[in-house]
Image (cartoon, rainbow, N blue to C red; front, side, top):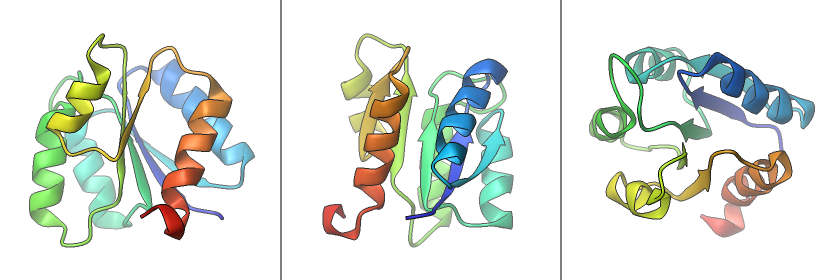
Length: 122
């Protein structure tokens, strides 16, 4: 299934890696460097799934998730991508559908995205 993926990540190398891995699978990927840019991207085109870093300048992951859900009646699933030791708790705090720890296995990222895009898992 081809999907529109929004990668919200302030580390350009990591954002490029996530984008490359998902584009190789046929997904259309847009990158935002912080939550503010991500909100602008969402207004341009609704994503099917969002990969969200938590600690970013300008607007962090928590603030983005709160504002995104406030604005969107049909919010896309969010996958928190974080290096925090308490990644699962951080994901739960923002109502994320899943989480992936940094550094991540590219295949695990692909599997997580695919499982959340599958209508049977929603």
